[in-house]
Image (cartoon, rainbow, N blue to C red):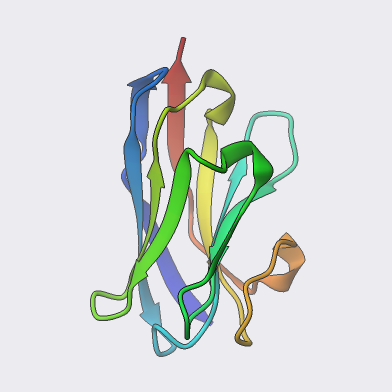
Length: 124
């Protein structure tokens, strides 16, 4: 497994931006797909974005396309989620995750390593 630690969450007004970071250690970074999920109070954890390790191709949830982007720095062993034009409905705890294999995945049960989460709150 991989050890993951998220940071960068906080309180922001609607229309603002935040960049989340996820520092990884353990398994060789850059050789496994990673993703971001989020969980709002009373709701299930949902997919936000994912990235593979060899080409950097990405997948984004429809709800965040055009506003969020996912990237990774393999040298720094860090995953990022750039969030622009934030909306109150983006309020949630955001988790980064890693999975074995080569391709990104949208289902949370396909990931075997999770961070502790970072809170993002968007005020209207």
